[in-house]
Amino acid sequence: MAARVTSDEIIDRVSEDYDSSRRKHSNLKNALNFLTRMDSSTPVRNNIKLFLVVEEVVKHSMNQGLEPSQISTLLDVIANPHHKMSQGMRSKFVKCLIPSSKVPQDAIIRALSFISSKVFVSPGPSVLHSLLLRWIILVFDYIDGYDQLHLLYNVVFCLINSHRLIPYACHLLFLLTTKQDVRLYKVQKLLALVNSMGPESYIMGLLMIYKMYCPHLVPMKLDLKHKVFFKVHDVIWRTTITETVRQRNEADSEALKTASEMQSRRDKAKLQPRSKRQKMMIPEAHYAAHEVEEEADVDNQDLLQTSNKIPYTQIESFTEFLEAIDRIEHPSQIAACLNDTKLQLLLASNPDPLIMVRL
Image (tube, rainbow, N blue to C red):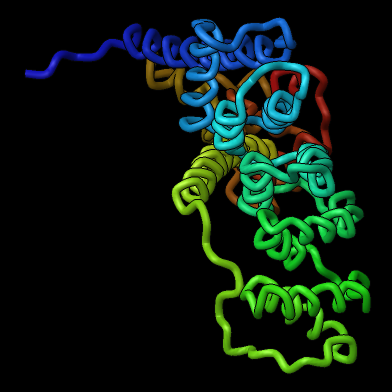
């Protein structure tokens, strides 16, 4: 038989999960702080603490993804030239740039600045720069804005001068291109690449989008039967990014839905009439003499013989009500008027302060 789980145990488990989540974020923060403080004097080989920091960043990014500020911080670490971190370790960190929601546009701009700085410098861009450019393409749909990024269109176009970067540069240009970006010198540059490299699919894809916007600038006939101009790279990496963002969006949507439902219930409760929120027990109109009669067998007429009042319960018609309106005795429970229009009229025509206090 399964053991019963008490409410205290449930609270303890929730508290443990919350504390565990806080510890994870605290561990990642400490790891990023360690990486940002690294300089040329920080040893890399046989550095156990650095090894543990790398493992923490990898584990957290693969399981939960990184927040926008964490992506910016890690990208600064990758591009920092003032420490002895190897290209392999930097590439490992690039693989960890998995967003949990959005990617800040300024981080993309800094990445492009880092990549473009090596295009015209010997020995040229490395595998690390190629990996960063591929990462930009993978997270393109998750960037939080494109206005500043688009201003770097001509900088991205310069990347086609690198044989290592040209496939990914053409892909990124394809995603960024608008009609205003198409210029004759760019078309001529691409046509020169076709003559030297052959009709590579990524070059033809970029020429196709140029021809769509400005057909008069692209004289050559393009084969539009190609369904795929850009090869799919990094399938596992792409899947990890997609799944991480999807899980975060689902969690945020569920939390937003719950909060919205709670707010909706509160709003409805405020708008609902009191009778719907809390059923009021309204008594029926009756006269105290009936209670006395039941307990002591006293006649009503004996009780009223010293008074000229007429019990409201003895009024049978509206005509009698109007004729005796000044002598009508209110019922024992004045709240009965809430369901009786004649009693309401009686209160309005003869507003006795004592009766109003009772009500």
